[in-house]
Structures are given as C-alpha cells and as structure tokens.
Amino acid sequence: MGQRASLPQPGTSIQVIGAGLSRTGTASFSRALEILLNGPIYHCGTQSTMGPPYQVQRWIQILRHWLSRSDSERSTMLHLLQQQTDGYAAITDAPGTQFVPELMELYPEAKVICTVRDPISWEKSFAQVMNITGFWVLPWALLPVPGMINYFRYLTLLGEQWKQIYGESKPTRQTYVRHIEWLKKVVPEDRLVFFDVREGWEPLCKALGKDIPHDQPFPHVNDSEAVDKIARYHVCRGLTRWAVILAVGAAGVAFFWRR
Image 1 (spheres, rainbow, N blue to C red):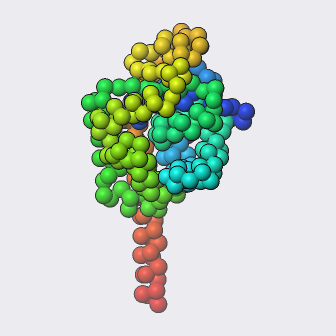
Image 2: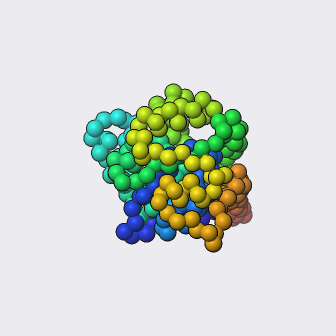
Image 3: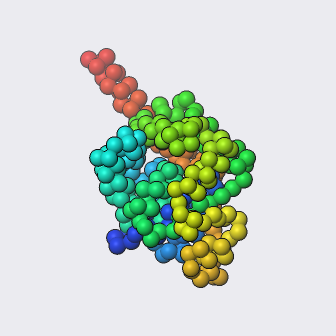
C-alpha cells in the first residue's frame, strides 16, 4: 500500500477479505478501503516488507501449519492467522488471498471482494515482481537487514502453497484464471464481489453499502513504483550495513596486524 505499514487498532475486526491477486490494484483498493471503513488495512505486501520482523516470521509459521494439512496444525494456523489480522478492518494482497476459506471461517460476516485485471497484462506485471525477487544478489544484499533474512524462506513457502492450490508455483495467466475459478468454488455466490479499481467508488461503495465520498477522488497507487521503492529501500539498507560490517572487520584486522 506504500512505504509505511499500518498499525492495528484495538477493537477493529475484518470487514472485507480482499481476494484479488497481487498486481490487480490491491494498493489502490487498500487505500480506498481505509477511507470507507475508517480503519487500518492489512495490505500483506506492505506489512511483510515494511512492518516489524515478526510479520514475516508469523506468515512462515502460518504457511507451515497450512501446508501440513493436519487437523491439529490447522487449529494452530487459524489461531496465528487471527493474531495476524486482529485490529484491522480489511486484509488485501498475498498471502491473504490464498487464505480466503480460513479468513471466511474467522470472519463470517466479512464481504469477499476480488480485484480483477486482464490476465495477460497481469502476467506481464507479475513477471516484473518475479524478476526483482529472483535477482541472485538480492538475498545476499538483504542478509544483514533485520527481518529480511527470513523473507526468501517465506517466498518459498508461499510458492509451495500456490502449487497446492493452483497446480503450479510460477505465476502465469492460467494461474490468474485458476484463482478466479477457485474463488467461485470456495466462496458462496452471495459473499463474492468482483471489482475493477478503474471503475472507481460507485461499485465498491454499492458492494459495501457505503456512501460515495464525493469530497475525495478514488485513490490510484502505482503498484510497480511502490514495489521498486521498497526494493531500493531495503537494498540500500543492506548495502549500508554490509559497508559497516566490512569497515569494522577491516579495522579489526588492521589493529591486530599492527600489534
């Protein structure tokens, strides 16, 4: 949703489960929900990259319990998922989009809204993200950054979950189609809404029974720019820390050499 993680608000509960895949306007959707629901929104991409380290660590736990498929593990997974989302008015983006059945169980009154996009343009857009996260030097650059050391393990587990749900871990336009088909199977028809952020306030407000905020234009956030900014931010943090580590190491070597 940007370069700042949202903070939970005590007493706030999930009213909207965002079921749209990443790169379908989830950042704009989150900003719009923040206005309409007057509460913090858990945009998974932002929370996992810009939030405190425990966010990624907890998602790793949730994914591991989900992948085990045992009843006891599922109970623990639901408990952790509720902890992760407690205090937020809505959840959007992955991996929340792959936990729609579990989130519906936790929040039976919540509306499920899936942001949509042309599958071909979605595939191209998602490929940009894959290119960034797949750059071989990135894990090494992020190694000294608090919280980021676990990020690539998190992505690996998310890929395993995608493979179980969609039959493949590498996103393609067919993944997008399978996601829509999967939602139609797991979400009752009267709880599922499809929404294109290009349509603005009217269809979203209608789905939520909210008045259109005529004094505010519908927010449009460039997801590509947001991802690039976050990637540059963490790479700069990592390289700075590596510089300090190397400088301290070099100073230590020089000290002992002189002695």
